Image (cartoon, rainbow, N blue to C red; front, side):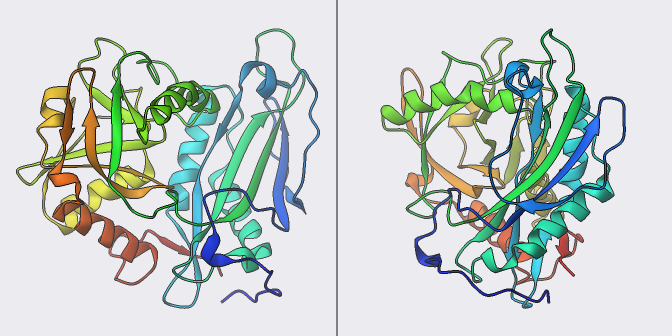
Amino acid sequence: MVKEKQLHNINWDKLTFSITPTRSMYEAHCELDGEWDEGKLVPFGNISLSPAAGVLNYGQGVFEGMKAYRSVKNRVVLFRPEKNALRAATSAERVCIPPVPKDQFIAACEQVVRDNIDYIPPRGKGSLYLRPVIWGTGPVLGVSPAPSYTFLIYVSPVGPYFKSGVKCLNLRITNQFHRAAPKGTGGHKVIGNYAASLFPQKMVKKAGFDDAIYLNAANEKYIEEVGSANLFAIKDNVLMTPSVDGSILPGITRDSVLTIARETLHMEVREHSISIKDFLKADEVFCSGTAVVVTPVGKITTNNTSTTINHNKMGPITKKIRKLLLGIQREEIEDPFGWIYPIN
């Protein structure tokens, strides 16, 4: 177990999913077509950027979301960090950012978790959220890759993503907006993808919904995802989710859910286009992501109808998948897939 520093005066019972300043963050730099320096820990705080920075003017940046947990084995663990490292690298390449090597990415995560270990909530009270970001920070006036880049990881203790705890979400299908288009950047964790979802999210929340469900941009016949999570439907013991075809983010929790369903629950799993009609006929619907984990959907509204899913309650299969996933992450049950990465 990592030796801990003196605990801070944080009310763990009142943690929300919001930023709390911590001790330090990791920072590394790279020139275009160059190699990343080894990086170092620096005090948590504001950073200085040119007003012509590529990330500020043209959105040249990517990010990841991860969590560090206290497990029942009295140690701190990460969940599948190699998958985050791989996705960060492929996302970076998509927007002409030098990819961070996997070993450096994971080592940087370890460093910042160790140095801020006293900010990790007690078991059952929350987690330490890691936000790795890779930005084009060098100045550029014309539309072209920035001349230099920054890789930074900051962390914050967080509580539940939803203030009221796990609840069945009330979602609104929108055909007024698209999250991403085929052959664009929707399949990568690029910062601009999330800016595009802010206004639709604001609109649906104002109307009393939790979030918006986006349709495919080509013909608006098929379900894609919500602004920050992948979607699943269960019908007749078959687990279905939209296939990763370039506009849907290949979520790490998504991949974990598919593996658990296939390997542990021995369910039939299908990755394919799901029509709105078939989606609304599902026995159970849920979304998945680092922040939301596995969260049930209880009601879905279109322009014409509102459909209640499983009596607005978490379905039995959704409950099993959520329990198994959290059990592995917290080391409450055996990890048969080698997903847990202990901080030594």
